[in-house]
Length: 270
Image (cartoon, rainbow, N blue to C red; front, side, top):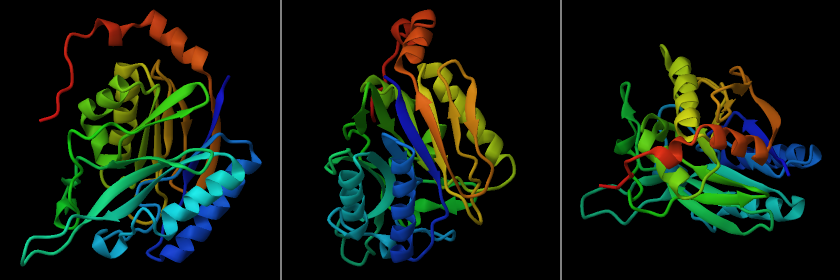
């Protein structure tokens, strides 16, 4: 059976309480259209365009993840959303950092897993590592089973590293989900679309990029099928879009293009 996914291209504020109201509205709309899964962008709990760090961090038992769990259980839908967690205790004289993370909550309201972003965005004049610490490269990939499909999670800048997507595909992902606050700039929207398309084709998966709307980010949430066909593409404005994913269509592409079975190399963390 098909899996209905709502893509939440929302604007995220510095105000965490306001963001929780935004999330509640998005969940209510996803439930209204019968979605099985709602995906929200990177940093959905709180965002500042000049940088996110420990000041935005909340524990997994904090108000944001607690809200996701409650709403998921009440509405019977799964949620994938970005947040910021506290980092490790710092060494003497150093400042504690945050952790860019994505949480997956199943339709019963249970926390199914957490992905801590491995590739920090130290590029294009930005240094995410000044404020955040990376996740462990050898952590188990985050996957979430929804209906007859398995969703694997990477985050934003990870999209530029094909081994990140391949690793979640090796863990069983049929759909690669990429919550992002993709920073705007020359050719950035073009890169976003091209990279999502490449990850979909090379892995014969559905690639779902969920962008944040607002100043300084591109929006442009995009869904690409395993054959490379773009099935959904948003502009830069806030919006919720819902699509049905058919497991049999995915299986048909993999039968005709068995590139995963034909490959000769594995992904090994270093």
